[in-house]
Length: 320
Image (cartoon, rainbow, N blue to C red; front, side, top):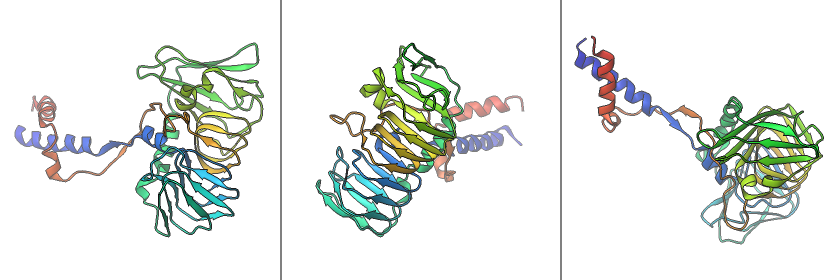
């Protein structure tokens, strides 16, 4: 094969290789969705942002949603059915239900209600968040925990090159330890905190969040990844975004941040990190997972920066 022919083959291969990978922005999904469930949700109070329910939604008491959204946003997307014995107050945004609904909607912000048409699969954050949770659990820790004299856990954070602090801990060290609470010590340059928690189950009834956890940073830039938990009970006020894709999660108190779980029972409120100025559920920046994407048509290859590709190809075949 002549060098010119080899260059063309290599050029096409490299071009396809580059195009066939894409990054789904998990940070945008975390920011957009205040509540996400893979399956069912029972919500008996208010949440302030947007909710995606992958199964059925039960609302036994009067619920309120979508406090900080415009009327063009989807405040509530339910793939299955809604069962409700009272009103659901939609402060802003619209409702999209794939099945049926017994709820009475107060559309206070002028949004619409759509029933009986499949919720577009493209809006679902479930797959990306589930994959990301497992990926984050494999990242090496660069930060540590210690216990202080008040029998509290200190999360001592150190930034990597992108400002991310990673802690890999167990449930026995943290939420299952019966401690008095948690403090967040921020190292220089830390912009996001990821706490990977290795525990099959969590039963948290003791302790509170203190210090930096009770700020907009702690509520909006810290994510707790219960990546392998199947049952989680959080009895006290929680600060930060909760991700537990495989878990049945029960909230016994309010959450300031967000929730992504398998099945959810929430008798408490789920707040945005900063209720006064932002509709975002998460402010931090976590690494995306690169996933396979579609292979482009041949015409697409012409749009690529061919100079760099030709240079790589020439190096490879220079001795041919």
